[in-house]
Amino acid sequence: MRLFHSQHAFRPLGRPGCCPASVGRLYSSTTSYGHRRAPLAGVTVVSLEQAIAAPFCTRQLADLGARVIKVERPGVGDFARQYDSRVKGLASHFMWTNRSKESLALDLKEEKDHAVLMKLLEHADVLVQNLAPGASARLGLSHEALQAKHPSLIVCDISGYGQDGPYRDKKAYDLLIQSEAGLLSVTGTGTEPAKVGISIADIAAGMYAYSNILSALLQRGKDGLGCRIDISMLESMVEWMGFPMYYAFDNAPAPVPAGASHASIYPYGPFETGDGQSVMLGIQNEREWAKFCHTVLMQPELATDPRFSTNALRTENRQALQTIITAEFAQLTAEETTARLDVAVIANANVNDMRGVWEHAQLRARDRWTDVDTPAGRVPALLPPGSTKDAAQGGYGARMDSVPRVGEHNQAILAELGLS
Image 1 (cartoon, rainbow, N blue to C red):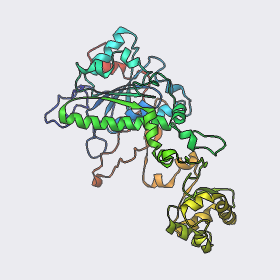
Image 2 (spheres, rainbow, N blue to C red; image 1 turned 60 degrees about the vertical axis):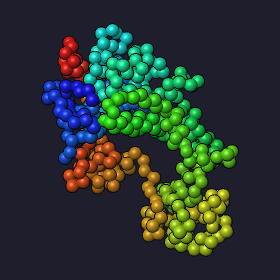
Image 3 (tube, rainbow, N blue to C red; image 1 turned 45 degrees about the horizontal axis):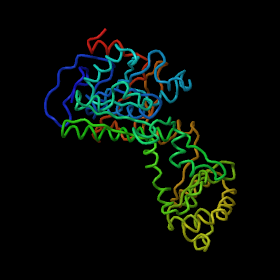
Image 4 (cartoon, rainbow, N blue to C red; image 1 turned 90 degrees about the vertical axis):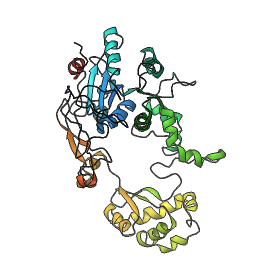
């Protein structure tokens, strides 16, 4: 594994040996985030990234201790910086996906800036890019162009439709991929489709890029060789559509859009209560259905009603069953309904808005919040799922460093490379 002379120098994956002493200091954190060394301490990631998919991928790598150098356009940077100004003047998407990174502003159309990038790649372990189709190849950054000089470099290309095929050059945004992948056909109310309210196609692609990079690092620890990873937003999203696709296998009818309810399990969704609120509940099997009838609806005879005796029949007759459930819940408050569901051990949940999530009692009880620095001051941030601060559990913690300004680390990185 090639080493960048920084505080992240470490023993190569899978190969014994020592590393040179660190000589640089580009940010205040160390390679340990908790009681153990961070898993990716010493891994250097260079990312030509914008929007969500690639930044979300590399933020996961940074959470695990990788050094992520984010290459941005001088002046304006990643265009996601301008999406909004909701976080003390900073963009909400950018705040979410770009902590713990270093920003290097380069105009890659300029020969001297392009040379800086190529020198930087001599010290990198991973190159990630989600530029427009064909852009990285024109810059000489394809795996084919880099492989001879950098055989251990892992190159991860993230695009809408993949690096070949008839859709290769089509522009791809999250909503467009949701549509192409069939997601909109199973969302909404049946009269009008509805997109998922978050960038789910970008997130899917980012997470598959992240997991593939981790796998490639493990493989390189065995044979010393890098590889090319080709991540398609379409393929990532279609993988997540596995249930509705198999449900409609061999030209069977596809799931019917059911709003916030489940398309093929009933009752499973939101139900309004007498105080104007809603309670989300889900029945997964016949044992739960019987307990729901006895303890929640107080109508034990419904458990054997021929209209509702199986999940398939309950789904088929959902309108009649919904009328019965809402009539009973209309006599109760949301709190009273939840109490009955809890007694019956029926899965249920609050229908939270964003304020409800910020103040969620479970997240606070588990101490899942911390703060990160930004150019506008400290901002709360959720600790990455899976990370732990408990030494008894062998936890390594999570890296939670600042969100950078455009080009904030230019001078320090150039100095490390011996450039002005």
